[in-house]
Amino acid sequence: MGNHTKRYVFVTGGTGYLGRPLIERLLERGHSVRALVRASSASRLPSGVEPVVGDALDSATYAPRVHSGDVFVHLIGVAHPSPAKAAEFRSIDLASAIAATEAARKAGASRFVYVSVAQPAPVMKDYLDARAAGESKVRESGLPASILRPWYVLGPGHRWPLFLLPLYGVAWLFPGSRGTARRLGLIRLPTMIRALLRCVESDRPGVEVLDVPALRAINDSE
Image 1 (cartoon, rainbow, N blue to C red):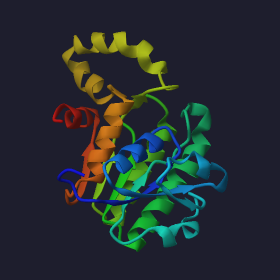
Image 2 (spheres, helix red, strand yellow):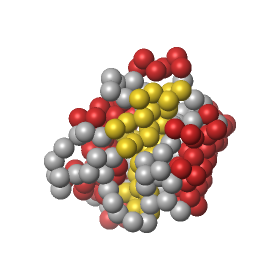
Image 3 (spheres, rainbow, N blue to C red):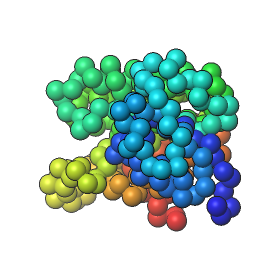
């Protein structure tokens, strides 16, 4: 396990785009993982994970399986966000974050890890608002926390923003645009997973917010 302490980790969204590769890395590093799943999805979890069958929108269905000292990683969200899914951002993304922070607070979790989104950003106000409200719930929990703010995580099936890359080059030519280009930079999946892993293993007190430059810096330092 190297020089890090074994963590007991509770993950929501463990069969998803970020959840499955993160769990695989956590297990490789000797951590113990419980993952919230629907009954129909339990077989999609990596082997070695303890499945917790429940409803991400109802903390009562899984709260007893969140233990004191756990690191709670919340990865529930609408797949492939778009403006057409505005109602789902509140009914799924925000509702699940409210349930998760409540369960983690009541259990006495040691840390809460939450994936938000770069703010401000020029698109999908409803999505940004739901994630910002989720961040507020994390802060209200009083738990030590890591809030990660990627704009878009590139990986298999998630590559449409690549056509924007030439625009980033143009933005760097204009000093007034460089801050925006930096904040809304694209993150690759392995970079995001390494950042999530570092957050799980962190002992930093209080609430840390990791924007795109900070997420990249974690990887550059390794």
